[in-house]
Length: 278
Image (cartoon, rainbow, N blue to C red; front, side, top):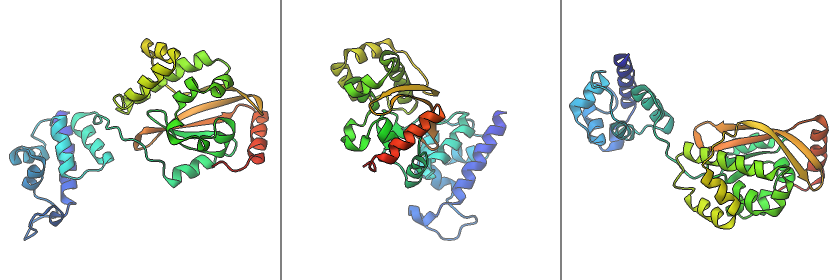
């Protein structure tokens, strides 16, 4: 089994190596028997033994360490998904997550959100900052466009915004669930260190958050039912589902689907009556 795995990794590395242009890395092109970089050139870029790298491509070098595989991935200019594939082949697991702060979403993702006409939908980061939303979300949940970017954080709204708190039917249960799900999301995305400042701020501003954070409970966002007291619609019930954004472990999409046809029609009428969200 281990030999077959090593052979698959070796073949994959060889294929990636063959697709690189030596001139782009400052290597003399000259006469080469095969396209791409030479094995010793990859080893030089990765700062490992040329002999050991040769054995690795030939399936007889044993499993590389995560550090070495990372260096080889860098030497071969692998993309994130290619690097993940190399780790799955070589070590049987994905690489350790490298968190990167979101700088918005693609136009395609925004169009997907906008396609949900009566279902509030948003995209949040692993630190629970809302980075994209649709008109239904602005009308039913929060008009994030009216908030400074630094305030578009779900935890800040839940614990520090009286309007958002009053809209929840069972705020205590919601708050407990949100803190547990936030803890899991941050850990999964490798953003534990990045949330430190936010956690410290919320602990200072909200004794209730501080107590829940000390409990160390964890939850998975998954799916469920959300009930709100909307200032215009009155009681509203929605079913929500959370989805991962492929290739972006720091982002997730949440869609709130009206639980009944009556809820859907009321949301539709309200969205139609409101000016376009900023």
